[in-house]
Image (cartoon, rainbow, N blue to C red; front, side, top):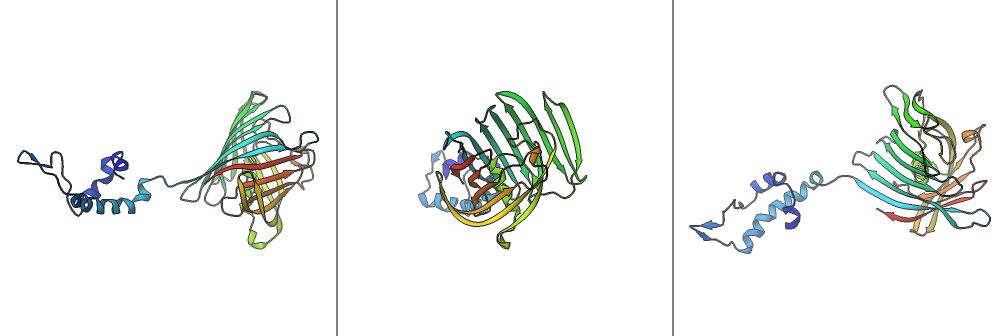
Length: 303
């Protein structure tokens, strides 16, 4: 405790020391008539007691107030001849703020199929679970593909996008938002977190969700531009799931692409997800069949 206090700015504790039950000595305050005065141990105990109590009470104002959840998801292939082989990975962090807002960041590496995709993304979600903004940077085949920033302008009722990529040049867009549910992000941990939008108190049911996202490509491998998709999310029920990171009580959900034209012009295969049965909604396991034949497994989790 003493070492911790010694590293802090003195002005943080001025009021607590001033109000202490027993005054603290100032500079050279332990010198009396030229001779050192050594207080007994009880003096220090009495003097520190009220300061420590006050610091403990004020702790929320002196320390960071956010909560962090982080982890790693392994991408696996189930294609013939590659069953169970690693095809990429996703490192993620959720920063939960005291007002209920959340910052999701993800670093995604897709090695198969070629060309490789590298995605860095930051997504800000407000306390009302509505998106604020999204920032993404993309590399395709180890070459810069594009970067962009999307924002929901609540006052104007618009989605705006500012982006750049070699194939699209400088891009500025505005689109009326209307009623929508979330930003699509492409990291699978974002897909899991979006399941918070379903009311599980209703039991198993389905609901159509309207998304704006920076790419309708199934891998998100195009320069950022405003795209819109509608996906059906189904709540299946509760199941326990064991993965490398441990055994978790989970809720099972399923994304179904029922749009006539398909996501990005091609129907996206059904995506089954098992997410933690709590407010963190961390993706524990995911399965996509069809032409993709992918699996996603939580291998590390810190919270």
